[in-house]
Length: 220
Image (cartoon, rainbow, N blue to C red; front, side, top):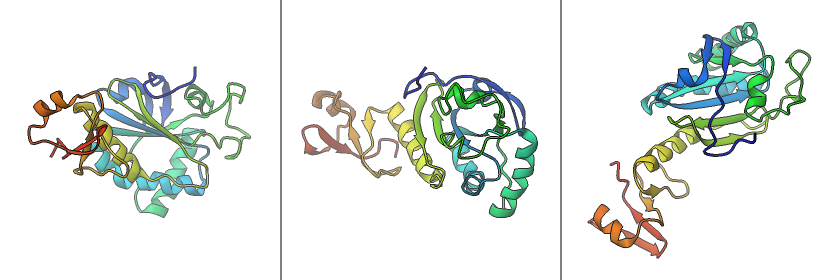
């Protein structure tokens, strides 16, 4: 099954750097970020795991749990964590799935079904499509996914920005414009008529086009 926005995020049970975990149970009522890597001991991924470790308090402040994934065994993850600490100054303190049988990568459409059943003998290039970030909503549905090439490190500040937008728009009948940051003006969604908008926003709004009406961030 091809995954898309609003698809149910596939559940799985796997060994991780923090023991055996079941994904949906681990998520509980939280938002979640699952981000994957094609191989341990690769340069870009090493910087990414360190970057996310530093930002973990920002994710926690948004009631969002983070989980990594790499198609190698736990024993390699444990050794890799020390390298990440050496490079970034912080040791990742979130679970990293050991997907050595490639099961989760296939479940999340990051590898073809005929990709084999073991990470042994496979290179990072063989697994280059295992470079996706999934944001999972509390209803266990996929809210966003981004796939990066191996040579492009991920920007986790953008992931935080997207979570801010998704959490805001889940509570209010608004959308966020290009390059929006928390606290900036937002857009009234088209399905809200002007009559309805007057009740929600009695102070009015700025009309740029009949279909583009901007109001202050309602969470402020």
